Image (cartoon, rainbow, N blue to C red; front, side, top):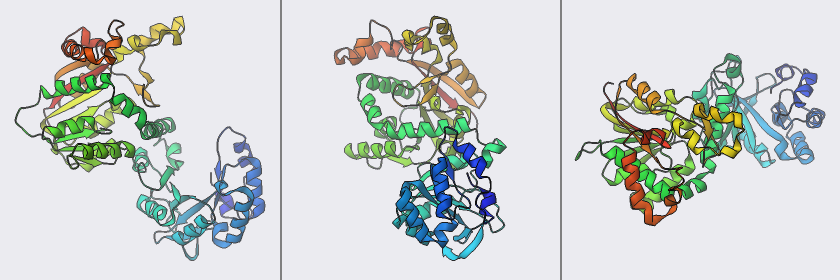
Length: 452
């Protein structure tokens, strides 16, 4: 929250009653604008402001900042960095601050213990024309500060571009909320999913090393390879491929593979596994959001596209699929795996539901991931097949993966290595046939692109 009235006036008490009311809400408040004296700072701390943004005070009175940090602690403060296109600081209602460069001030504040900055690039007339992410990244690198990107985050594309950028720890969204360009709940879910993937690598690795994970990977890869032309090298794109189990399998049979994922921890783990297996350069990794695929790769770039267990984590699966399919060449193959809506009642812990809630399981569109701390969506083969066919794709086949996953007589077999071959063989046959595949835990659709 920026008190713009106070930023343009020497009287910092403009709108203080409103600020005090906002601080009564059960939220964290980051506040700046017109905070120039120790009395202003004491007031902000007293009413419950979580973080105070310092701008003019940092430029004009570093001694005051040092006193405030000593009194209230460095975590109470962040540097508000408004710069013009030349990188010069703007203060007091966006007036020039006498040639002081933002980096110089940032280093000075960092030495006082302030480790967070909010950076906005503002034109001399006060207009904001979107984030200047490159300048924000450079500021973070040169000062050591964690930077929250301000200015104008206009839409979800601006927001996701801030992901995986070294030194960028957050983004401000204000005008985009007012205009409806960003839906807050969607932005929070997308950010929460990213955090979940970054922090859950140990659990994911443990899951991947289980026998049931081995069977799942083996079944889905056999399903895919049975439809690919023999003796032909296909360039593959693994969209949202995580730590690259599928990518490494394709690379071993000679396919050049590009993998796109936002999780740096997953990508680092892929590199470690590739080095251990002597395949350091077998998979080319790209750290950006899969929404950007259509912008990063030209049409006809790939002969094979994998999207395995990705779309269930997104609120905009259709936009994601459109982005992924754009660089797939005509005649190219697409393998899609996601969670099956028809399997939900079989997977439910009945004791967690009241009696009158149970019928709703038949239509439940959402649930929780078993590994990641994230919500997921469920799909049906019919819905996805129809959608693909309206986008120039021909569905070649569909499979069920884990048809017996929750059947009481075989649950123990998923952890019994002695039964793995039998279980894998049975699952392979069941996954091809209705009605068994219709209630499998996962859907796998193989499609071929018929048009550009």
